[in-house]
Image: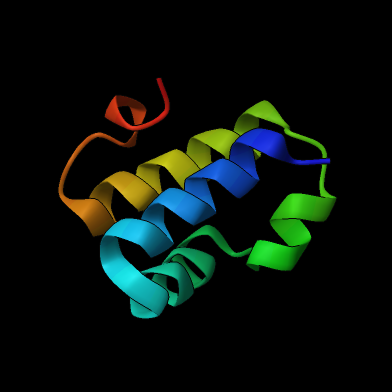
Length: 65
């Protein structure tokens, strides 16, 4: 189960709305449902973090503490 990935999606949706979440799915190449069902893999987390940081205009790691 993708706990970190699910958290990233939730943060993006909270900060940037549904449009932000959809953009994250497009940029990361994985839907929220797939992310939550997937295991947290380093490469996938890195890709999602990079996309989330770009969408939010702030480092996603600030919100993951």
